[in-house]
Image 1 (spheres, rainbow, N blue to C red):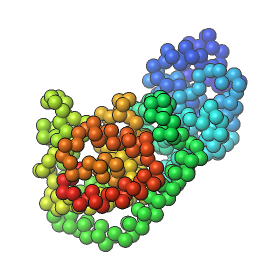
Image 2 (cartoon, one colour; image 1 turned 60 degrees about the horizontal axis):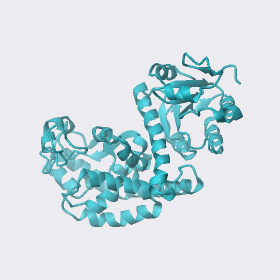
Image 3 (tube, helix red, strand yellow; image 1 turned 90 degrees about the vertical axis):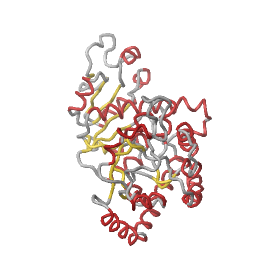
Image 4 (cartoon, rainbow, N blue to C red; image 1 turned 180 degrees about the horizontal axis):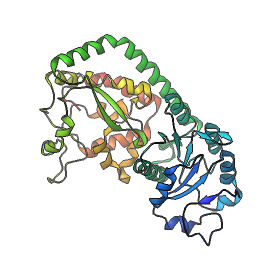
Amino acid sequence: MDKNFTFNFNSLESSPGFPTSEDVRRMRKSFVLFVGECNDLSAKLDEANYLTHCMSSGKDAIKWLKDKHFRYSPLPNVIICNTDIQGIKTFEYVKSLKNTGYLKDLPVIFLTNNYSIQERDEAIRVGADDYFTSSIHVDDLCFRIDFLTRLQELSMESVDEVGKESRPNLHNAEAFKMWSMKRAFDIVVSGTALILLSPILLLIAIAIKVDSKGPVFYISKRAGKGYQIFNFYKFRSMRVNADAEVEKMKHLNQYKGETDSDSGLFFKVKNDPRITRLGSFLRKTSLDELPQLFNVLKGDMSLVGNRPLPLYEAEKLTQDQWALRFLAPAGITGLWQVTKRGKEEMSEAERVSLDMKYATENSFWYDLKIMVKTPFALLQKEQV
């Protein structure tokens, strides 16, 4: 075994070199393998009671993971690797993992010093679950580790409940082919649409500046696939600082629960007083959503998917029965929009149910079907 191999926890007298099942069971958090430079994030995870293990060499890490003795010991729950590791290219390292049957489903998180969209896309292509800068806050990293670990467990458990074909392995050839088709379609359509619609986008931007004070675009943090957080773009349709008024308007929430303390999973106010005059028109025609084409082009979203949720909504949907909706990408349009648009009686349960239905049944052809239905849904008066 590698002499540099060191576990960052105190008592393993009974396990010379490898954690036993009992060691892992006693740990409150996940077993995390760091490959590459073991920065201060490892120490901070250790302080948060995670079981951490660091290896600077990518080749040594592969040998360690593939070692016959390790097959009878607990595998890491998550692998975190730098995009610059000793002895091997990071993407080749991930490919090697995915070619090893009992390792191919382990969640992988990439850390990089220099964020690159091209590198992020390549990381996703080879099977990575996340791509972050090394400056990520430890609390955010902890949340991602916990979420990916639980999501993997739910994916495995759901096979028995909903059938093997409804939860495809994201790393097999068929799933990758579908992802490639979907991504190529997103790039072509969003890029073409942005070029063709550029005069309209410019006119809307000018109209917003004339109609009310404030920026042209509304930018907020949203949670997409796998609870990945990104900057979400829309044309501003409300007065400035409208988000700060959410707390004061909870009693008007259309999705309000049965008690005053239960403000609902989602937030929507009928005849919202925060909406500007032009904003009302933009929302009714869905023109306010056109800037999301930039999100699609960047890869944050897809043309079709589940609605990207504001963080205050997403944090309420992390329970087991709801977290499955985050297996699907975020989208401009989706199943619940075309199914329920225009129906005020749509409940929270129905919305989440439709999100989970899309997450388990989505395909490239299913997306095309939803896109065909979208223009007809837009003709309905009620906003969703």
